[in-house]
Image (cartoon, rainbow, N blue to C red; front, top):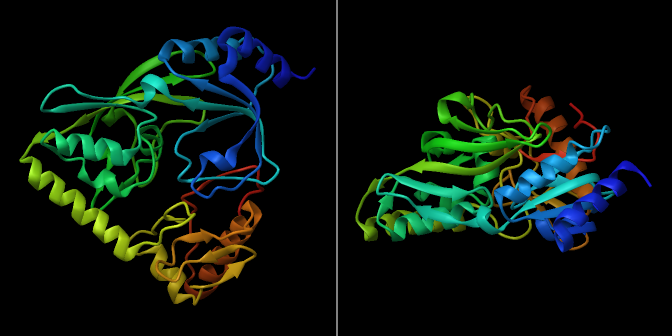
Length: 310
């Protein structure tokens, strides 16, 4: 019995049926691709997360961790992930309107849900989140943004647990070293919940802003199986423009294709594999570098692949 088997067995003793083996990651990502996660645990409360951390710390061997949220920027190799996946649910999926200045959202809450619930309460400032297909936890970790705003601009405080020492800390936004699509949070740290700043406004105006963003997305971004923007925008430029300039719209590898509607979106068609998407990413980086001299940086979190070639 290896370390992961012992770990999964111990977690099952503590948390029962919330532990599973060989979880299909394709059910948890917007690409609907990727191989199995060797062991996974569904965590519904902060106390259960403490239990998982305590069990992890009983093992001398480091077990790879994968926090599985909405999977909107996650690409797992077809061979899967040989570690422990953590799925947040229950109280992590709750939104609380604390006051007319603060909305508290659990890490597993989808961003569009936060936007819509806040708008329905006549609170403005979070409408831009409706256009981002991720969760609060992932948004804080990568400083997700769109339509002229980023999560860092509305975040007051975030509660975080370090899974390998069990510590829980409340960090002010100013202490997270936010930059474009990045923060100081590591892969060993799990976001528990976030406190977001809002302002009072007329409900109808809040809903109008949401409707405008939704309409813009429908007109300018493709639907279907994708992970949103594949590459980060270089300073002062657009990844989509550079990919289009390199003549790559419509380019495909296997079942993965560069969207004709927005070049920074890679679509996974029927029969696509994670390897198809990964190789198409490599091709795009090489071609854009040859044409413009710009080396695009991935916005996707890729798991189980070698480093993307430059």
